[in-house]
Amino acid sequence: MKHSLSLKFSKNLQFKWGDELSELKPILKQILKDGHTAIMGIINITPDSFYSGSRVDEGHLLLRVEEMIRDGVEILDIGGESTKPGADAVSLEEELKRVIPAVKMIRTHFDIPISIDTYKSEVARAALEEGADIINDISALRMDANMADVVAHYNCPVVLMHMKGTPKTMQLNPEYVDVVEEIKEFFEERIEFAKSKGIREENIIIDPGIGFGKKLEHNLVILNRIDEFKSLRLPILVGASRKSMIGMILDRPAEDRLNGTLAITAYCSMHDVDIIRVHDVRENVEVVRVIEAIKNADKNGRK
Image 1 (tube, rainbow, N blue to C red):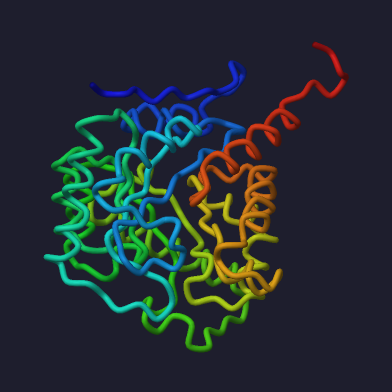
Image 2: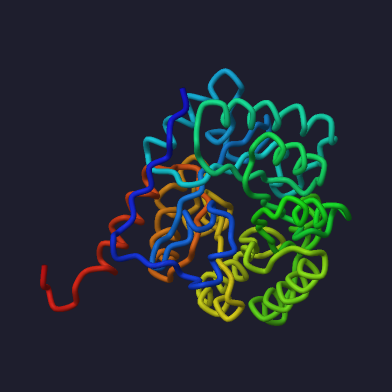
């Protein structure tokens, strides 16, 4: 029996992107609401992701998904390859073996948007065939020449993330003159490339890539200036959950970075970031609900 996802939005919320959303797949219409920050829950079908609490085996997958849905998740993000700093790539065969059975199992039991965290076109294609909805590409269509064609063919939403280098090399002394301007220029080029391959601009989500080829000061500046990315007029995703930048600020291991994560979620929600990618669904959902209640309150105190 399938469990339907119940999204709880304010009656006053309007679609953020106006008439442009009329051409979007229902999945983005469902998620992108003005003044609302959607929570994307991380499910790693990997043995080596940096936060052990995100790793799920097949035997516990449905229980984890059911828990996330109960806690208010709006998108699941499934990954079969760790992209932590210094991580080695896994083979196509291994990633398919990890990801595709998980997609099949989830889609059989649940009606919930599924994102696939992959830069491999064959993984994307196979997952979309099994009912996945979104492709989350850390390389912004650069690491597999066929990825753009797959996204265009399936007319699916795609997350274009900024990364300097590869997961193996990205933290080897990254440097920027102006990190925000350089990332914006990167997105402008990637958006034009995607459009040239037949990807609809309305299907593109941008992710500045916290922790992907950035030092602590770069990550902080990106968050401090997050509003500047709105000039690109595309939905913004931020993924900072339990990352090393929080550990550097608080001197805490990944297991003890929830409070820092919630601070970033609150900040991003206050700044109308569209999607936050997190490990801990319930806690982040509750932060967003409180922030949105404050933002939506009548300024004169009327009921």
